[in-house]
Amino acid sequence: EIRGFNLQKGFFGAHGLDLEAGLTDVSAEEAAVKRPLAAMCRQVVAVLDATKWGRVGLASFADLEQITVIITDEGAPPDMVRQVRDAGVQVVIAETT
Figure 1: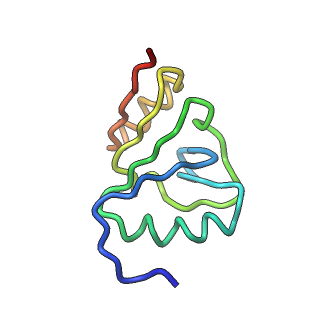
Figure 2 (figure 1 turned 90 degrees about the vertical axis):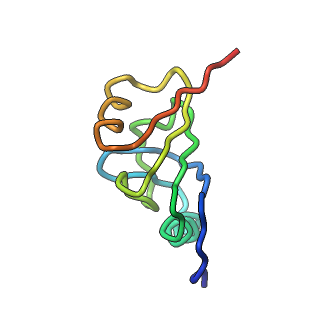
Figure 3 (figure 1 turned 45 degrees about the vertical axis):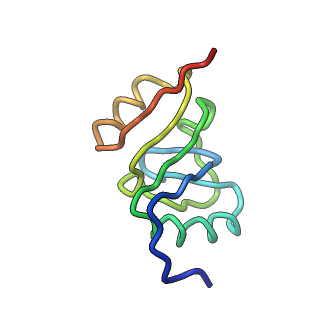
């Protein structure tokens, strides 16, 4: 069981990001590990390419309100990026070279 850690930042990949479901994975087991880790982090950083936006996996592990920053690429859907920013999440668009 994972408890009692005080983590500054956690970097998480995910199967998908949905406005209602938050960060999700296709594996319930993987989400069960990520969920308590995300809860212990002062900052949750999601690293998602454009294909992850709007996708929903089997199990949620972090609500949108728990996410501090999303790092993504230029292909992220502008409407959803705006909604996430409006919810108070910083979105960083990484430039591709």
